[in-house]
Length: 329
Image 1 (cartoon, rainbow, N blue to C red):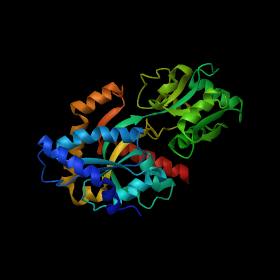
Image 2 (cartoon, helix red, strand yellow):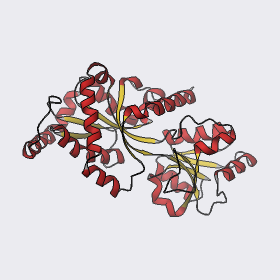
Image 3 (cartoon, rainbow, N blue to C red):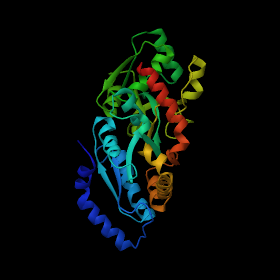
Image 4 (tube, one colour):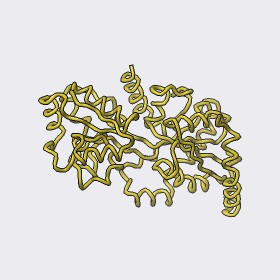
């Protein structure tokens, strides 16, 4: 079992160094939190969520005046980290760094030992919308071309997707809502799914706006699930604009997009709202610090960087969760 003592043992050395840094910087601690802040990352070190959490840690430490440490607890599609956070005292300054829709999919689809309502999104960092891609030399130049071909050739077209997660779920939802006989082929990861499309093994690939920039010169986008056109893939039809003509109601414009989020125990917001507000305000202030904004600009994430309170996205996340639960029945 992973709990408080385990996390603290893992962080011991890091905390000592962070405390020394805090003292040297002359930061003044607020009434709360009085001790170190922990950010528990749901995924392995080096990934996008981990990099963003470590980028946030420095400015957040300056805002709060206490050490901020980052610990990776990957596994179970985010369940290991979420469970560890929920085992801490509800009023401890312990933050879960994870993604939506992964946070919702654990309880809804993967029998997580906790409810979706046990955690509250305190802040939203970045988003990466879903994208339907074809190879540059594909005969399908528009989303309408693809749909027409699928209807005229049932069972012949295929879409690759990262297996077992939101990508695959989105692909299944898309063809199901359109009533298309298109086979979804799962691959162990988005890169392999994209390579299958580039190699001609499948007709199209389900990917993500920013993450698939590595194949921008080799591919063409047919559809993007976002609240507007992408500057990286301007040729992609916007899902919320094109789907209604097929009689399909889109749950949200950015349905099943990947959102980098920070969450805390819901009990903190309920029982200690003033502490929740301190933590939320500090995170948002850190996200708008000079250091953080410079990194956003350097990564060319300006249009995908939300830096918003979790409450601003609650309706969207709830609508996505509702659609996911419906698809699971």
